[in-house]
Length: 218
Image (cartoon, rainbow, N blue to C red; front, top):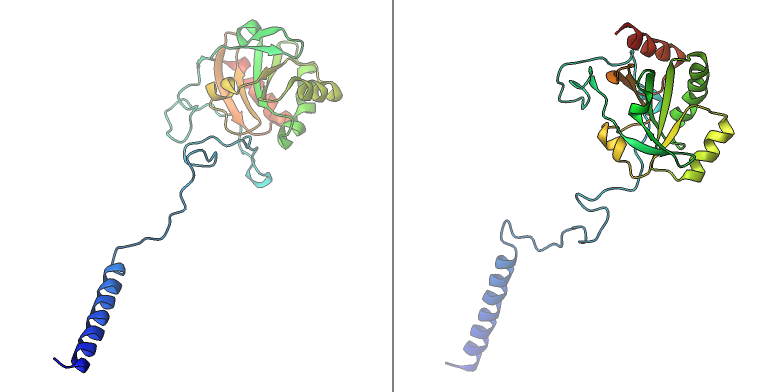
């Protein structure tokens, strides 16, 4: 075999080897592109809780209609089927550091309100709550604050001149117990401690009247 033949054979082998590597690395279904997977300790990864507090409904998403009194099971409503049962009791500390239980208010109608100072609609309904509370001696508005510190809540309540009882749900456990996902949310409880209805959204004076009427007519 002469020199030229050897050179041509070598070039041919190199070309064939290069083509083989090209086809192998570009086979259908093969993808060596790095994936954008979250790091093991990435707090935004799957299954990790966010630090953003639940938000109140947007201005155009306010709940319409009256307090909900549905008693049938509804997969889209975590509270459906729980009305007309005893409201789950709990004990939390108030702004003076004293323990307060929901059951302490048996014998009175109770508006159990879940709220936060950063919640726009909570802020809007607070003055109406105060007025309604003062106008109805047989009604208690028990305001459960969501995971805020004592000073923030106490300053807010004192600045607003609100006198209804306020308790601190520091770890959010009571909010979870009542399946609260938006603020404000209010539950309507009769004098025997029976949960009769609830309302996920800001209460107007008219809705407060309707809620109290439901309690009184039961």
